[in-house]
Length: 183
Image (cartoon, rainbow, N blue to C red; front, side, top):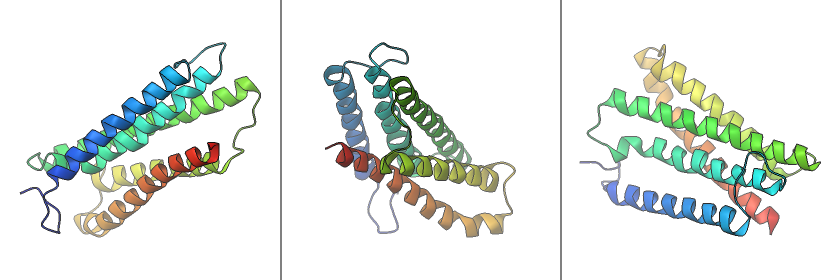
């Protein structure tokens, strides 16, 4: 039975998370394409370059980060090593998308003559991506390659999960902080 320590099946919550992730992705894409003019890596309208930033941050840190966190609950019958590899790869892709999203924000600022790192959102974002990358490297060397001793892995796992959730909440909160900053 796929469930949490509370005796509640995880499946309904994962279905809801997938539905909300899909809805969020559609809304951000509609917002960027329809209301903000589209997406581009090179354009005369520099806002199109910036529009890539929220799309990649949402898909990377929020959606793929969520999928990576839930992979053990989404596929409870999946071999543990396969689930661990999937978790690792999803977080790696999220980190790459996040880094490219930050690059797009810097590119927009530089091309538009706007100062970089002028807001709380930008500083929290740099801190979040740094913590996310540290968490990923820690997970890689502790649980995957070369892998720590079993006793170290057992002791580190709850801290890895707790810190991972902290970084995830920080990423989600930072995206909300940006929305509040702009309003």
